Image (cartoon, rainbow, N blue to C red; front, side):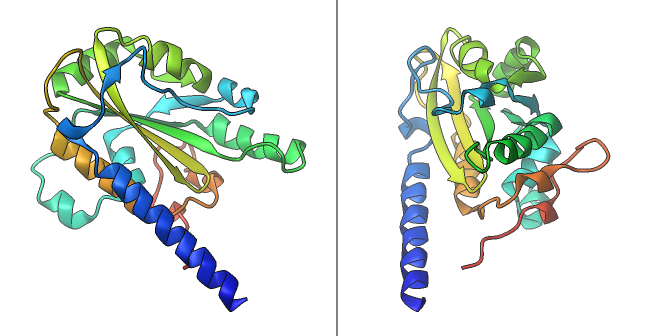
Length: 223
């Protein structure tokens, strides 16, 4: 039993180190590709998940998801990450995942997806937010959000955090040099790497109308 725990601990440590290496490729060093060529959100064989919806989250919800420490927030004169747009699972999606998993006797995935877009400027984010819907089926994210953003290029990062898979896309104008919001991108990637696994995304339902994802809702993995 002790040997199994040791192996599991070593496995988690290697996974964490791999994620840190992935997050270390940030900002101007990130590998940008035209929006039509960058990898999108993956679904595997779980096609029903494409009908599940995600919604645009508020800045405070993003901070709670990333578990940004109060000490860091106190140093900021305004809310951090002003050029970032986040899409998180809706109440319907969270409940649908649970129902699908039950109906398929455990074969259906319980994993939800979060998609973060870190734009090169607040102006670019504001312009894109006017074009993008506040709610969208996951199956349309690749076509309407990623592929649909012509004239831009993206760098993609993917992290598995228990029942949540978090995608981070850095977005800049096509042919631009470097990445103006590299510090924000770096901080977001580091925060995602440090997150503990989400064990039960039904805890993300905040009563009465899922206005936020509370810090207490995430259950830390026991090491």
